[in-house]
Image 1 (cartoon, helix red, strand yellow):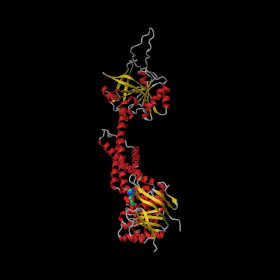
Image 2 (image 1 turned 180 degrees about the vertical axis):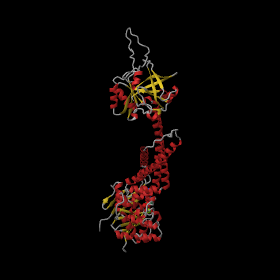
Image 3 (image 1 turned 120 degrees about the horizontal axis):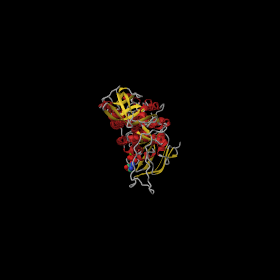
Image 4 (image 1 turned 135 degrees about the horizontal axis):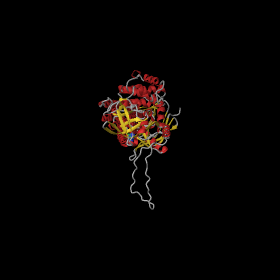
Length: 406
Length: 232
Ligand SMILES: Nc1ncnc2c1ncn2[C@@H]1O[C@H](COP(=O)(O)OP(=O)(O)O)[C@@H](O)[C@H]1O
Ligand SMILES: [Mg+2]
């Protein structure tokens, strides 16, 4: 064992009460960091998961129809005082098979699925509901939103005769698996489908509005033969979505909306949550650093005789500095091991307090090994930094002075 | 005669910046290898100040200190530490040992500081020194569990462990009862002879001074007399 480590450990062991107190202090600080990160991380992850469970990361569609207003008056031409947005028609993405291929070839895109979306009415007997028709290709759509586990009855099967509806709509129309439902579009086309399955995506509105049919059926109903209205994408890293969307706009001239753009409120909320959590953690780190520094400063005063003796025996200044840096580092390291355990315990306890009906935690905590490593690294580095000033004080002690006055 | 271990040339020392007190007035002195010297004189005459200068724990205000013929005034603090570790041993009056460590570890400490970590043979060397001072059975005792005389003997072993040519001892028996004091002094004389180590021992005790090779007497920051003892 290096000389400096040997002396540092003995100094710490000898100052029992001080060492225990400061270790507890560091431990509590690290526990707060671990617990807070786990809680905020868990909450955010489950919020995002819930949001993205029913959304594609990016939705690509044909660009909107634009009005080109006359901005410059010329003789005989009136300038419109107000520019009105044209009513948007359902338009197909031109040359979509090529576009689909191009999107799938992008390095950050993990899955893409062509879809046809439009408004329709679902009718059964006298009941009549306005719904959002979603024509999909089951094989590729499964990789955008996996409906399989969300089925409450029947199965997720869409083809020429089968459609899938939400629990809310099923209740409104009074249908169940095997019953018939008529779908009618504003264009006046209509078709009868069998309800193959009923889903619950955990959102009442979507459960009442979404109706899944096959791509071909939707094309027919919405008068979009051979065309598709949207391509839905999944990307590898969810927070890359906006950048990938921008890249798609630049490369295809199509309109591309990321989940981040469509859920800005959520993102702002998550960001300010993270910011306040960082703030708290920053102040905890500062408090821990001050605690370590003050304990070591006191220890330098208490050990000034020993330091004087060590110097008289030929201990070099750097060695004295290292003795105190090692003490700070050891305190940070040992305190963070204890704090990590405490923080983990606290997190599990908190997670076990409130449970959802399905047995999952209401406050999910996200305890990753990276979190412990990070907290340990921060505390250890803090210990090292906090020891710098005391170490320099120790190094500047004059051995003659110390030995004379003891 | 061999080259002197240490030579002081016109060394002065003053303290303070506003009110300057000159404590040493032009000291000239040479110490020979294996010489056992007493440094006597009334309290406040500058003995400890002189010892600190000799031990490179402090720097003179003017004058030169040559160790083994080499001027020490140009050395950096770290070089002075290195010289201290290699060429000098110390025995202090108070707070002799590191209380966190055992007797054996205290004796090993200068070796550990010099080499940076424990190496083969260090433990054995420290143990044989403890044996030599008659404290082999206390090797694993904490320093604080030893009596004053035992602590001071361990301090002597520690001062000798790197075989320095010169050991500086500031009133090594001043804090001990007569019997332990005499024991420690006997030990100093014996190890000086066995290891051929020069000693400079500050003492008030005239009987002790009388049993040294050479007696330096200081008064008011000057060396008043420098006598060789005919008996030895
Ligand atoms: N660091 C210092 N600052 C100011 N005065 C000092 C200092 N060290 C020693 N002195 C003074 O120098 C004189 C000699 O002290 P010292 O060398 O300890 O004498 P001795 O060891 O012979 O008793 C004393 O008057 C003491 O007050
Ligand atoms: Mg003195």
